[in-house]
Image (cartoon, rainbow, N blue to C red; front, side, top):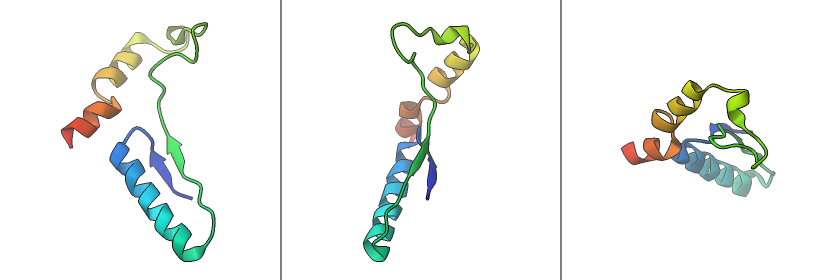
Length: 73
């Protein structure tokens, strides 16, 4: 079972590609575990600033946003 950074589109692509090759060769199911970070609230009634700081959210929006990483590629 591959575990992959779900915020890294290229890593997810590689994991899916590897898993497909394994599935076709071994005829066994594969589970891909994508570890991600949720940038937004769960719902309109959830306010994530109550349990995580603004600095953490801003860090992810600026430094660690998945689209920024893909754009650098």
